[in-house]
Length: 247
Image (cartoon, rainbow, N blue to C red; front, side):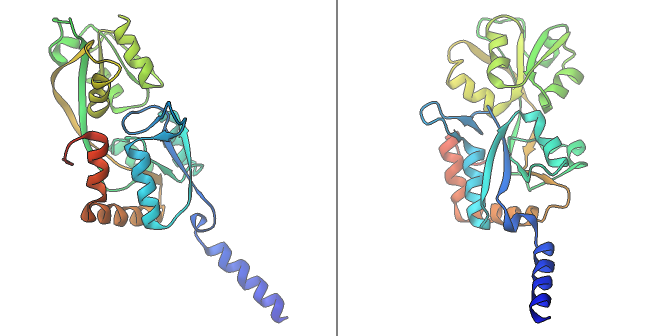
């Protein structure tokens, strides 16, 4: 009888324990969103600011995880269905998203920029996009902005950054609207000398880490993020990937 009682008590404790305590977390990240997440061509491993930030947070919290690169537009549904425990992918904290998933405190402040080919003299800001063709990434804040604010004739949507930028360079789009750090990274690398930014920074926005509704990880991650900002670890990562002091 004593053995049976111990056995049932053990089952009860296991049943009450949070799922993340026993198993590795599944952490979703975008497949191609440099400098936040991308595959290193030399190692074949996914890296970037988001990837290294989560790894540091996980160490502070004391959890193990499996990184799951995927298309950005699949991350929110994955969190909603609890097939994913965490989503970190330069995800803007938007009211409509916050209705279906929980977010951490903001960890990066950004905005949207308009990118055109270097020799373009017709587009100097959002007002000039009316009747034009704009390319951007599927399921992002940029998609909403291009459709509602820019008055574009057509918004071409792509699952990854490379295709979005290639559409501009090949002449299939007049402009790209996308997140400022990604635009800046493209201008420094593959698009160097071929493109330019026009207009100001639009729609100031903050990135947050996503979780299924009610996840106990939110408070833990917020505490770890606060600790990293206080002890300088966050600043070190920011300087490494963006070359400037955190804003």
